[in-house]
Image (cartoon, rainbow, N blue to C red; front, side, top):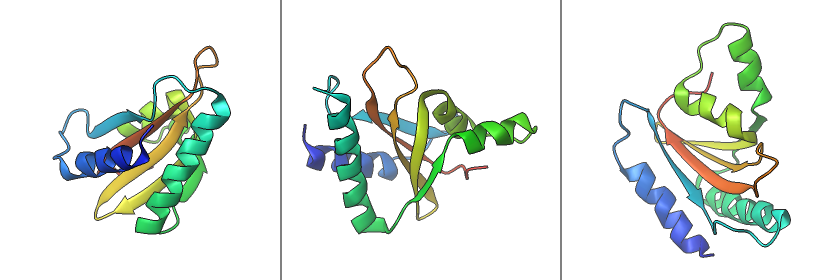
Length: 125
């Protein structure tokens, strides 16, 4: 587990051109197998603290907001729709016209959660 490498990975994804399809870059961060769920959440919190030091306080919200928006017929970009399937809570930063979303993929109860980052230029709904 090397937090410096994951920060560099986030920077690398931000630096790359985002393709029209699917409209985002994504990556699983940290080890693939966590010793415990608590370790996974602690790692996400540590990454969030470092990103907050760079870019300021993130907006924090639950994916329920996205689901409700879609249920009312609102458009949800693929990047944000993907998050509703796998994550519960999001931390988001808007940095130079790009959204950086840090979350824990925790909706699959049979699997250990995973720290996840998504980079997109699509605004949230």
